[in-house]
Structure formats: structure tokens, C-alpha cells
Length: 407
Ligand code: PLP
Image 1: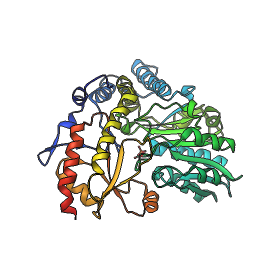
Image 2: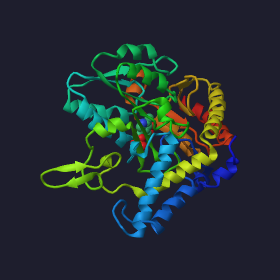
Image 3: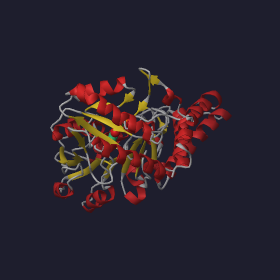
Image 4: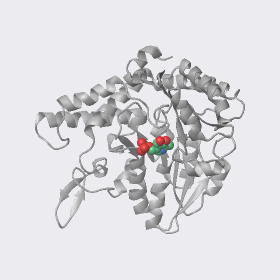
């Protein structure tokens, strides 16, 4: 049970009281980005009004305050994901940058011509394209894990993909289209039994479930603040310290060095080795407030609330003739991708918008998944802690209302 009523929770999100076309906003695009509560916005304001000075540099008090707040945020992230040390917590611009960092740095150093990487068919482009960029530098082959009809991964096929040239496995914890929660621990065990490290794209998991990188035994784990009620422009790469130590820097510049001369530069230890230039310390400090916010509500309570909305809405949607829902794996997250009859996803999304309902339409940055489903795109509704059953009812009656217009 959430410790506050939904009405109390919603009061912290002024955006939710906006109206569109005379209808109250129903915000169902939480998978793309969640809204940000007052507490987090106030933390941004505090940083600008009280603590703004460059971090890790000044001897003066405000600079030390700013550095202290940024490093406290690193400790909050460490605790949220149960990393062994703050050296394992690298701040990035988001999940995308985190994955690019691993592909460029780890991939650039430790993968060679003829090596193979395993990805899955349900990856976001953020976990495909960085590996393809690596393919421009090295002759690397990408093997793809297929899925079963319910949207879960074909684990037998996964096991069979390993060869003695497999050097990296990278997959999403939760699919942003299907909501499938992949069996991370089991997949890591298989990969590690072949001596292969694992990167998990946790962009869609970190907002909805407790993450314990030690229990999962992952080598890299990436996620984004803006999907976790936090500010945009901040993300995290968790990396196992023994690997981070061996990896070369991703970018060069200030903050990431030990000593610089024109003859030779030495680098700071992780995490600073991977944080060249002035970091987004304002939003990093505010991200810590978002983690506190999630902690106060309880991530399990948030998930249970979203799950109740998911179950009710899915059951109601299935009563609508011609409804197709993509992704029905047991224990899925609160994401519903669907198509109604032969209607184009874009038309459905436009009509829902006219009724005040914000849903995502398109390929959701997962074109290979769309190809494997034989479709161009879907409509996607996804829930967060501030969504209500009454909004789901509005959504269902809107679907009934627009259905005849789409025939
Ligand atoms: N991975 C998944 C599964 C996602 O859903 C997203 C964003 O939707 C990303 C990666 C990219 O996240 P960001 O744009 O915050 O870097």
C-alpha cells in the first residue's frame, strides 16, 4: 500500500492538472519519461539559488557544498542499486550515454575482429546502435536472441547462441514495448559460465523495481533519471570496479585526469576517469531527491499500484473487438502496446490526444522488434505512481468511443 493517497501524490505534479481540448490530461507516456514532482524541482531550484559552483575544483565553501551534494547523490545511487562502492557509480547523460561508454571503452579495448556479441530482439536502439558503431571499428558479429509468442525471451535459443568467440552479452531488464521482465540473474549465470560479461539496460526497470546489482551479479547496469521522477540529462552507469579499472577513458578532458603534460597524461581512478568535463551536478543532486521520493513511497508499493492499473486496463482492453496487445509475458511491467483492428497507430494516438490522453505511438526506438512482430508500430500506454483507476476508465471509454472512427 502506498503511504499516501493518490490525490496527495498528484498534488506534487502541477502538470497533471493541465487540460487539453477541454479535457483533463491523462498522462500515459511514462515509459518515455515520467513527470517530476515538486520536491525534485525544488531541489533543482535550491542548487541554482544556493549551491551553484563548479564541483571538484574550488577551495571555497559553495564549491565544496556543490561537490558534497553531488558526491552524496553518488552514495544515494550506490545504495539504491546496492553497488559495492561509489567508485562503481558513473554519472552519464542517460542510459544511452552509459551504453555508448561501455561499447566504446570496453568494446574498443577488449573486443577484436571475429568476436561476437549477444543482444536480444527486444532491444531499444540505445542498446543496438552503440554496438553497430563498434562494428565500424572491428569486425564483430551480433547474435540476436529471439522471443516466444508471449513476448518472453527464448532462453533455449539464448543458451545455444554462445560460442567460444562470444565476448559480451547486453540486454534490457524490462522491454519498453512489451513490458517483459527478463530473467537477468539466470541470463547472467549462463553468460558468466562462458566467462562473458553482461551489460543490462535498466532504463525501464529502475523506476519500477528494487535493483540489486550484486544479487543480479551484472557487470554493467545503465539507467536514466528522467524515467524515475528525476530531472532530464542525468543517467547512471554501474560498472564492476575490476572492469572499470581496466577500461580506458571514454572521453578526455578536465576532472578525469591525475596529471597532464604534453608528453604523458595519467588518469584518475573510476568513477572520475569516466566523467570528463563539468558534470550536470545540479540535476545529479536533484536526482538524489527523486531517489528519496521513490524511497519514501516504496518502489514495491509503486510497482503494486501500477500493476493493479495494468491488470484492470488489460482485462478491459481485451473486451474490445479487434484489440491486439503485444507482450503478455507473466509478471510484465505496466506497459501496454496495442493496435486496434487495422487502424494505424498514429491515428489512434491522434484521436486519443483530442480526448486529453497522451500515449506514445510508433516504433518506440525498437524497430527490429517491430520487424519481428511484422508491424510498423504500436500505440503504447504506460503507467506511473500518480495514475489513477479513473484515468484508466477514461482511457477505456475513449477507446470504445474512437473505435468506430477507425474502422
Ligand atoms: N533503453 C530503454 C529500454 C529505454 O526504454 C530507453 C528510453 O526510452 C533507453 C534505453 C534510452 O534512454 P535515454 O534516452 O534516457 O538515454
